[in-house]
Each structure stands twice: as structure tokens, then as C-alpha cells.
Image (cartoon, rainbow, N blue to C red):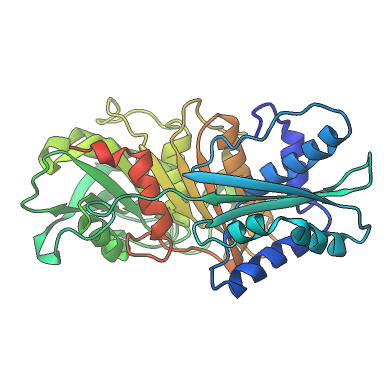
Length: 413
């Protein structure tokens, strides 16, 4: 997508659901893939936006206005293709069917290839000539070689767990202990002495949870050669008395996540940590903490570890966003690559909350794009909250290769 594309156009594509007949076009593509025995491609709002812009540009080019060819920067993929067609039918659903039928056989066959695992599409009724312009964008997400960081290379007997390490002390909050603890999972007998590290952060609405909640997730990364770190942070059991109290608790939790990463920098030699390759994954509140460490400046500087860095090399979140922070405190100038998994409807937020529908969370991703950084947003169909963060999870086929690329694991020592 052209970097000069106004934010207004991006907002418009979210509001108009990518144009008249686009959902018919989407259903036709999914149906064709199902008939071919191929899984539906996951919808990408970013590629939807790109498809809509290209449909608008195609209309304008056909009517004498020069427009650039589309580009898709700030989106991770190994290969990408797009197809644009037109239909003179005035019925939008019939026009969408005609768009599919008008594609050359080779293009239709190509769209059914299993390698296209993400899709974007949109239609636009051109005011100049009355034609319906439709674009389908298909991407082949990145892959990684087999072996370490992707596949299991250690056994459970090889993993040493350093249990209950105190990484900091925080003011008492909600009658909770002020010790901040982490467990470090370290492959023993490893030939590497400086290793990529994954920080695993539990959810719980900032009310509950501890480092043991993600013991299996941390272990799954250690089995693949990471140093894995499961942290806990300050929480407040029960209901929050006010929005301000919830905001304070969330801010404290981000501060704890920042302190945990600083601790890993300070103790890298002890645990064999490559400080240039520290990633983070989190569910729900844990995803919020991971995003906070990646996207915003430390709001409470100070403490014994203040001199150490805290920004992770890359983060993945599920069931979380940082949209509320766009205005205050705002995102820092240089931000880490981010991957977000988000269900179409968030069952924890509830229909009365603006964060119930996915476009609210996608605003976090748009702000990342606006800062010329990577945000890969996976919109999952239907209602749900979190999709998992373990290295053996259902969506690990996307985020393990993604971390491999963004953390440059091919060159890890």
C-alpha cells in the first residue's frame, strides 16, 4: 500500500466492510478453496485495505487518472499476488459472482493453491463508469527451516528450571506480596552459550494468574532451544473500584514486565541469554504487557535496573490491544515488530464495550504501521478471546517462523 495513503481511506475500508458485494466475493473464494480441499485463507484486514485501495486506483486508472501500482509494505510475507477484475452488473452480489467467473482459468486455479494462507479482498463501485471493481490479494506467509526454534530439539529431561527467581520488588498492591517472581527454563548441556529467549506472560484480567499458569507454554519454547521465562506480575483480585484503579493496575503490570526484561539483561551471563534476541508472548492481560514493553516508553523510570534496556526484539499478543494508549502516553518513535491475534468478537469484552469488535484492536496495528513498523494482524472468525501462545499451539505455524525472521534466529550463535 502506498505510504502516503491518507488515514481517512484506511478508516473508510473498516467502516464499509470493503465495498458492495465484498462478502459475497469472500464467500465464493472460501467455497472454491473448500471444494478444492484447501483450508480457507485467514482474513487480513491489512490486505483487505490494500485490496480496497487497489480497486479505487483501478477505477481511477480506467478513467484517465494515473495512480501507482499497489505495494504492501509493513506486512510480513514471502510471496504475494493480487488480481483485479470488473463487472458491469448493477446487482452487487451477482457482480461479485461475475468477477470470479471473469478471471482467467489460470488465475482461478492459482487462487486455490494451499500456499496462499492469508487473503484480503474488496470491491468498489466506481462513480465514473458505474462498474464494480474487485481485487483479491493473496499472500504466502513466511516459512522457516526445520530444526532449532521451530522443532523440538531437547527432551524434557534436558530442561533445568530455575524456580521462583525474584526479579524485582514492587510497592504492595491490593494486599499482594511485593516480590516479583519468574521461572527460567534452560536447556542443559546446550552447545550455545548465548541463546534467544522467550518471555511468556499469563493473562487473567490483571486480577489473577501466576507464572505457573504458563509452565507448559514455557517448556514448549525451551524444548525448541530457547531460554524460556515465565513471569508473574502485580494483580488485584476481585472487581476494580473504578476505571482509574484498573488503569493503575495495568500500568503497574507493564512496569513489572519491563523490569523482568531488564533483569534478563542484567543476568544474561548467568543464564546464557542473547540480549539482542529477547522476544515476548502474552495472552489477554499478558498480551497487553508484551505490547506495552514493545510500544511505549517506561512511564515510571528508576530503580536498580534502570540502566538496562527493556524493549523486546519482537512480541506476539492474543486477546489484547494497546489502542487505549494511542493518545496517552502514545507509542514511542522506534517500536518492535508486533504480531496480533484477535477474534472477530471478543467474548471477554462483551457487546457493550467498544473493544468487543476487532476494528478497535486493529487501531493498535494501524498506529504501528503509521510509524513504519511491522504489525501482522490475524483476524480470527467468530467469537473468542485468546488463541494460545505455546510453541506447540494451533497457530504456532505462523508465529514460530515469524519470530525466526524478526529475531534473526538464523544468525543466532
